[in-house]
Image (cartoon, rainbow, N blue to C red; front, side, top):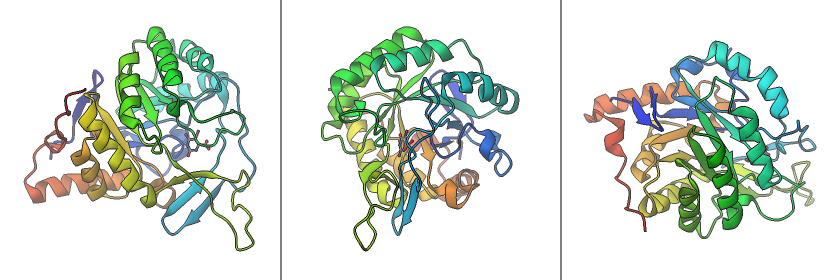
Length: 306
Ligand code: RRO
């Protein structure tokens, strides 16, 4: 099966990317996985200032997957420019890199694009509008506020010609509307979905995570991710990147059939660091077995907008 995919003015050698928050800035996984065997990866979300993150424990497992509340631990804009992008420039040749950006305010996102856009080593931005774990921000994630989505994306658009992916939330009852808002503001694609808010409690009722609630990922998130992709595929023409519970080629193909042109592997990497590489090989075998010659042929045409 031809896995090569042309999108956002770039060639992805295959449609399998590593999801933000599960691969650091690439370097963290480079000893165990061949990044250049993948379509690409998305960095941990970067904020203007460095953040230490939330109280431990930050992750907990359950039978359906994982709950996390990392709290945006990251080296900040300067730490990314000085300490992370040079490594990526030197070591990543074929994989396409998206830098994930996150902020407290609309202006934070714009300042991040201004601060990063002159750098080399990455293709575009994944604008993280949907972190469920930012305790220092009042109110819901930006993704659940259409005016904030419009302001963040349009301001980013005005500051860069690189591809912009807007990462949206699975618990958005008006997801199609949000997708339209992001498209109208200038997003080139949508990443669907971030983790789903949840909590795990001990037998005596105490939260398992230091921060209390967190975001659900892994197999339990897959039905929500697939539904989000299917709904948005029917509503907009933007290319979609599917993420949530992808653990094998069958899961990736389900996302393609729902409407995702690229997929991201997240939680599966924690249990099996080379899961994404395995999924690429499985897709090749699956195509040969089923006589499917092109990944793109699995992805249904857009539903035609409004
Ligand atoms: O850092 C986190 O706690 C985190 C982020 Br920014 C996000 O977007 N999604 C998530 O599940 N955790």
